[in-house]
Image (cartoon, rainbow, N blue to C red; front, side):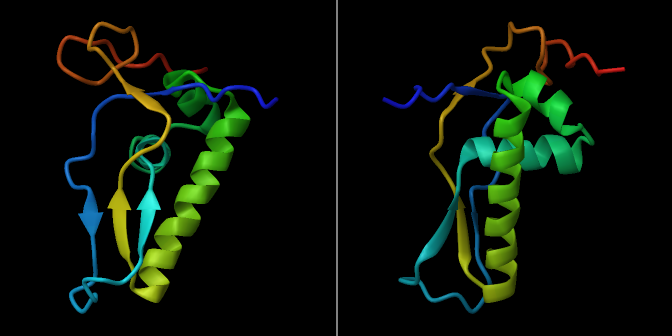
Length: 115
């Protein structure tokens, strides 16, 4: 029996959850980017975290972050190259309750950086 999946900590939901080219057909298949994959993109590419720092923040193993990050980048590339619609939804995550020691919302403390 496989090990149960661990919920990944996410600071907040994305402000926008659908992206599509102007010429996108309404009924066309869309690519699903999970919320936890989105969070790895946000932390690594926007915030400049290393995969190790991202793993500490999300409370998962570094290899899990690496897998999510690779999957997210493939999905984003597919969206850009093939002009497909992208939706951000689902995944194994839990939202930060703003009382944790590692959050960017008001009232929370920033994640400690690895030296």
